[in-house]
Each structure stands twice: as structure tokens, then as C-alpha cells.
Image (cartoon, rainbow, N blue to C red; front, side, top):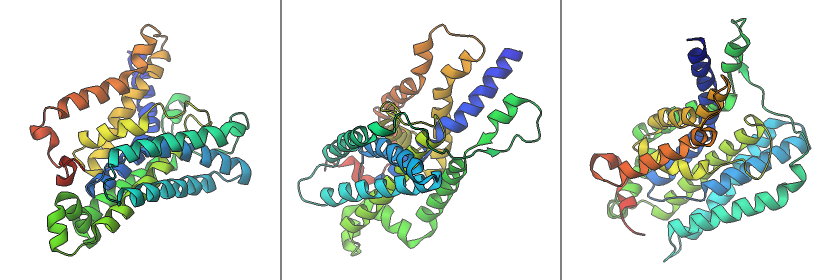
Length: 304
């Protein structure tokens, strides 16, 4: 029983940590897709954001400056993606892949000098201060970016359902004809949605390098930016559901390390593949159509 409790405690701690980049990237992708555009480039934004955040923190001594720099880099890449996709005969998916390759390539090239140096990291908020158990205190040490992600999800949900801007984004994403009839600026709306969504993905990258695992290396992302696309589908394009889906994906990612804490090393690589298995299951379910695609913006069903 003690081993089970240890595993569950480790999974809870790991879920809070591993879920944060999933949360930011999924919120960014949710915003982008709500406007009728897919951005596979968020994987590149995540990696480049991680590198820029770490480099900025190292050079300035301020991890929060690194977070701002990562968001800015994401904004720039998202703006580039949005601007080019506004041109005729440009495919969203192909452009997203180009952004992904470019972002990771730039990060690997300029990030080599920052693989060894140690940069200041983001502090954790000690919600477990009341406990004498070191494991409990460690599990309840929460990064401020996780709380910021929760707030962003609530704000985005409110924006979609209670503001004129959110309504315009939804109309543009659901029906281009309706948006044209209402005189809404389709390209401009998608441009700002893509840029803002990409900025959120950049913040997710900052979490990776400045909190957990808290370093910069070329294998930092492990495909989390791409998995977030499946996560958005799983969340039914609902920002609040993105919180729950991110925690689920985070718990899957924390399964392997949690079992190792109690000495279970059999199937090491199998347990570490849990997030990819979850992604595969989500894709299989959504490929069947029907209720699994409830909430999907109408323009995403059109080959553009």
C-alpha cells in the first residue's frame, strides 16, 4: 500500500509538471483552430521558445525575462505562419511543417552554446509547506506557469462565450460564408489568433527549459507540440477541457518516472511511451467521426 501511495503521489507531482507545456500548447492550438486554421508549427515554437527562454535567463539573470522572450518568439513565428497562410493557395498543414522544421533548426543552431551553462530557473510555489513529508512538499511545489495556464484557459473560455472578439473568432472558424456576410475580416482574425496561439506555445517551451526538466538540450520537447493537436481534439475544442486533457496526458508522461521511484524498472521504455499511446488512441477514436468530433470548427473539415 505504501508503494501504491508513493506511485500515486509521484504521478500527481509529475502530472502537474508534465501537463504544463501540454496546457499552453493546447490552448494556443485551440485558439488557432477556433479561427479555422491548423498550426502544426507549434512543435517548432515549443523548442525555439525553450531555447530562447533559457538563453535569455542565462544572459539577463531573470527567468521571467526568459518567459517573455519565449512568448515574443512564439508571437513572431505565429505571425509569420498567419501572414503566409493568408496568401492564396497556401496550405496550413504544409506551412505548419515548414515552421516546425525552421523553429527546431534555429533552436539547435543558436542553442548549442547554452547546452552546458546553468541558467536561473523559475521558482516553485510551495503549496505543501504544511507537511513534514519531503515527498508531499515536492509533489505540491507548483510552477507559477501552471497557475497562469489555468487562468489563461478560464479567460479563453470566457472570451469565446462572452465577448465580441471571441464570437468573431468562432464565426470565422465555423463558417467563412457567414463571416463574409457579416463583413468580418477573416484573414486578419486568423492572423491574430494564430500569432496569439503561437505565443502561448512559446510560454510552454519556457516551462520546459526553466522549470521541468529545467535545462536546455536538443531532445527537450519529445513531440509535445504535435501531441497537443490530438489533445485539442480530445478536449472538443474547449479551453476548460484542455486543462483536464493536459493533466491526463501529463499523468501518462509521469507514469514511467513514478514507477521507477518504487523500483519498478521492467518495461521502462514501454511506460515512457504512455503519452504516445494515449495520442494514438485519441487519433483512432477521432478518425471514426461522429460524436468524437463534436465541437470541431466547421472550416477545419474543409481541405484548404
